[in-house]
Amino acid sequence: MEIRQLITFQKVAELESFSRAGHELGYSQSTVTVQIKALENELGTLLFDRFGKNVKITADGKLLLKYVENIMNQINSLKGTLGNESARTHTLHIGTLDSLCMFTLTEILKLLREHHPEYHIKITRGSPSELTEMMEKNEVDIIYILDALYYNVHWKRVIEKKEPCIFVCGPQNPILKKDDIKLSELVKEPFYLTEADDNYQFALAQYLAFQNLSIDPVLEVGSTEVISKMIHETGGCSFLPYFAIKEHLESNYLSRIPVKNFHIDMFHQVIYMENKWVTGEMLEFIRIAKATLL
Image 1 (cartoon, rainbow, N blue to C red):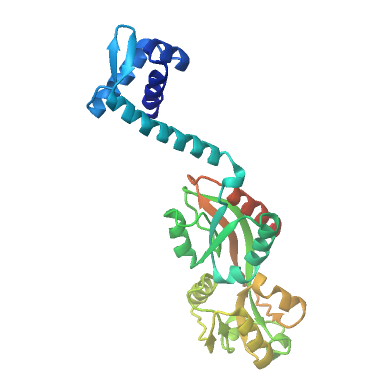
Image 2 (spheres, rainbow, N blue to C red; image 1 turned 120 degrees about the vertical axis):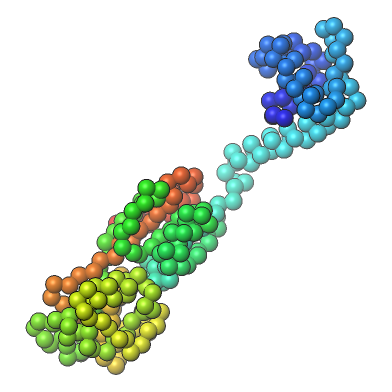
């Protein structure tokens, strides 16, 4: 059963003529006849009595007509709703990291809220691997992550910005007085780190392992603010993405530890699936994220 068959049936019932119905709908009379016959065969009943060129709707036809009228009203209502901006529910489901929620994403969401107070935004947090899996299952609309660059032909990466990860300590830490700080010496210092499964901590562990080095942290905690306070007040070092401690560096609350021939970069990335229907809400998030990050 097709919508066009129901429309044809409704028009024949209105005009009581196959030929006049075909003329108004732009069909030949034979096309109208074929559509009505197909509908009757599918429903297993006679919808019209034929008397030469005249047709009369049957009792079953009248019953079907009531259903068709309801169906067409629903279709017309749906068309009106889809075309009516004020009737839409503006939703956006973003997958991101805890650390980004605390810093850069907050500013993006603030601007998004200012420009579009009608948006309903849902945030789901997870690791980069968890978020990309949710994106591929269409459980989130778009993801914003900080990670190494990975490529997938089915992903659409719309933002890519390099973010250095650095060693930091309190400004009074004696290690800053050394002219040439070697990585092999630095790892012997007390370290306060975020959890080991954070992507930048994993990258650091891999980098150190390649050189037969490792760090045994004295404290692991998810909060960069706790870490910043600890290394400022009690000494020790940490390894964090620059954006998370930028203000502390600018205010001299923390200091960067210059390590010769060392760098690890992560990348801010906003990604959605290539075949994803890109909504206006997604486009607005991307626009504001680009203005904020790039």
